[in-house]
Structures are given as structure tokens and as C-alpha cells.
Length: 331
Ligand code: NDP
Image (cartoon, rainbow, N blue to C red; front, side, top):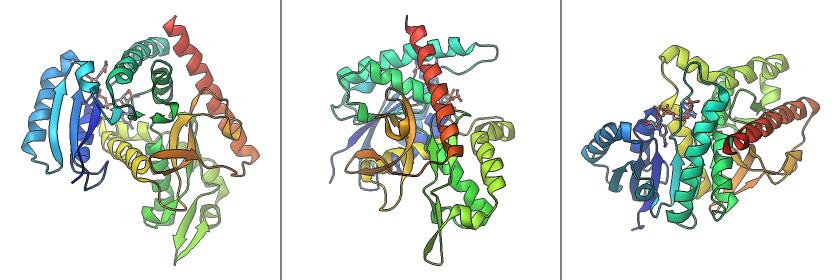
């Protein structure tokens, strides 16, 4: 039998936390043969609720769950973890300036970076979910210099999955037959959902989405804005945010990273830019990636048209601005 892997979830008493911990304990994240020990962290005001979640995790009697720690101590939470899913963050509240939210999160991610660097397993894989996800991940990377930069990522898989879902609905095909959409850039409304390389398998053959949809007007406008604004649409409908699909996407992200992407398929991940596609190094930017043996690599050589170029640059520009705002909060 495999030795258990330790999985940290921060903000575990929150909405996404409540949705993701049972998924992890059922093997959705690391596979049906991989036992896990859950490390759940939250802040002091949420300690009692966190303990309630722990009680439910015990009561659910998950066969793969070999232990569950619920703590408000960041050192205990990070100790020996192999995977860290960073969901905890300071929420945007009515009337708060962007800079105030950024400032709170910068200090949270700076502190958690140090704890992970000192106490996590040397090869710990980190996924930042809490917003602003790309910039929180960048701060984490900067303040955990001994964690290899390839091990620090942020979540854009939810946006990727939303794009697959929109194509599936439009063409009335199963979502599992759609692949290779791309989310470029920031996990924000400037993200660019790109279908230029996406395909659908129909009667055993892969066909370009552009050919099947045959409505460039829809693909270039409504499709993009629907994906960009899907989070807001769900909040409007549910009066709560999209925790279920965010938790599912976080599991997809880690599973593909650890276990590999299927041949011929790529996914979107926010990773440290190496300058691919002319994106300035030093940003955490969402790219198309394939994964093998626990490592991601950016898909190279895709043709980028002028329409895409402009959108990719606009979201990069926003990330550059967020980065300087984050740094101004540090000083
Ligand atoms: P959620 O669990 O709904 O969301 C957590 C974070 O994920 C937020 O930053 C949220 O961003 C982000 N997020 C990213 N994608 C999505 C998505 N698709 N849908 C929803 N959220 C998304 O928040 P809760 O308030 O329920 O829980 C947060 C937990 O974090 C609480 O238990 C709280 O106690 C804890 N916390 C921890 C802190 C720390 O570690 N120091 C500090 C503050 C809180 P957005 O805000 O943009 O929705």
C-alpha cells in the first residue's frame, strides 16, 4: 500500500474548504489508491467551525483518510505537507479599497510562505486559490526562495473548465469530448479564454471548435465574457460563490499535475513565466501546460493571432500592475 500523503488546506472552515476536504478524502485529488492525511488550517475566529468540519470528516469514515488535523497554528499545519492548497484569504468587503485587500493578503501570503519553506516537504506542490490568486502565488514564491518556483502555481482550472462547459453546452456534446481550450493570464475578468486550438471529438475524429461552432462573432464576444463573468453570475443566482466548482477544479489541477495529463491534452495553470509567448518573466501567468511525472511544461509553438495577442498582453499588463501594488504594500 502507498504511504499516506499529507495535504494542507488553508481556510478549511470556509465554503471552498467545506467542499474540497471530502473530495480529497475520497481520492478525487490524488487518486483512489492514495491514502491521505488532511491538515486543515484556519484563523482563530473560525476555530470552532473548523473543529466541526473535523468532526464531520471523522464521521464520514473515509477509507483513504488516515488522519485529520484541525489547527490554527500555521507551523503545525505546514509540517511535512506534500501538497498545499491555499484557500484562505482576506475577502473583499464592501467599501474596501483594492490596496487594502491586497495589503491584507500580501501579509498573509508572506507569513505562510515562510512556514511552508521551513516545514513542508522539500518537494511540496503548492496551489493558490485565494484571490488575487496569481499575485498571492507570486508573493508566496518571493518569500519562499528555497521552494523551487516550478512548485508554486495558482488556479485557473476553474476558468478552463468553464470554457469547456460553454463549448459543450453550445454544441450539445459531452464535456469530456471537448479539449485544449486555453486560459491566458490573470484569474480575473481580464483573463483570455482562447478556443483557437480547442477541439471536439465527434464520431471518433477531432475537429476544431471554430469549425463546429461556425459563429466567430459568438466565440469572440459572448463566449469570452460568459467565461470571464461566470463567477459573478453564480453569486447572483446562488447568493453564494461557486465553491463546488472551485473545489472540483482545484482537485483537477493537482491530480493532473501529480498524475499527468492525458496524451494530446493540455490544461491551464497559473505558473511562473519563463518568457514563453512573450510574457514577461517574473509574473505568475496562466498558460497551457502538459504534465508528466509531477512536472508541468508550457505547451510551445502555438500560433497566436493579433486578436489573441492583444488580449494576452492586456491581462499581462494587469498582472504587472497588481505586482507593483503588492510590492508597494510590502514597503
Ligand atoms: P471561500 O472559501 O468562498 O473562498 C476562499 C478564497 O478563494 C477567496 O479568496 C476567494 O476569492 C477565492 N476564490 C477563488 N476562486 C473562487 C471561486 N470560483 N469561488 C469562490 N471563491 C473563489 O471563502 P470563505 O470566506 O468561505 O472562506 C475563507 C476562509 O479563509 C475562512 O474560513 C476564513 O476564516 C479563512 N481566512 C484565513 C485567513 C488566513 O489564512 N490568515 C485570513 C482570512 C480568512 P474572492 O474573495 O474573490 O471570492
